[in-house]
Length: 224
Image 1 (cartoon, one colour):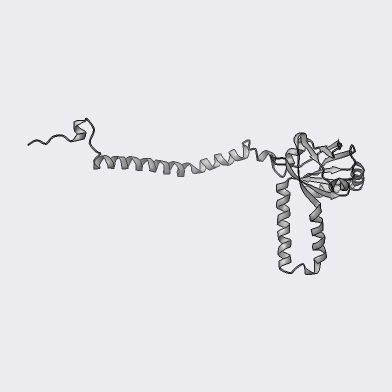
Image 2: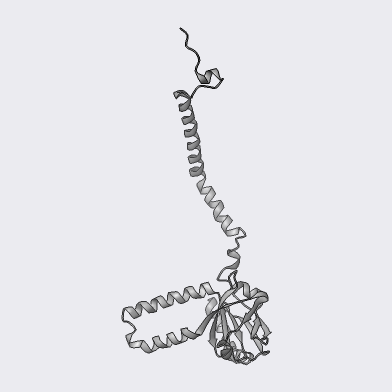
């Protein structure tokens, strides 16, 4: 007696794959797998060289604004009636993150300084970790007066501020008295290589009279 065709054969469907077809698929997959291994291993040195030079010569946005770029320039400005001052845009880009936040510090009488918050805070945190470690180890017991002085200065030295639109910075109370410039008074915005400084004009002139004669010696010591 002849057996009737199964359901799949009666409906024109192909039968299930057999062992031979499975082996063929396995060999095809193995060949493709080997090709990828040979490709990536054999060409890896070339790929790495290309990526290396692309990283150096490519227009990487981070490389265009490195922390080692020097902040330079001198700009006359005027405080408005609310003790706001306009920071030049080219200096703002070197200081603040995208949100405009930075750190304002009391530098010396008649001078305030603006710092990139992330970099200045990282440096401060690292230094304070060392101080805390020395205190725990009892290495500063004979210098408790210096520790207290450090605490006092840190408590009042700096504050987080925000540079608003058009580079406007509001100088907060406590810092206004240290700068000692009245509303409507003149100030000088000075690039100090790693930060931006806000100077009272007479204090800036006095500083230059003392420091400028030493410029050549300073320059030679840093470049030799």
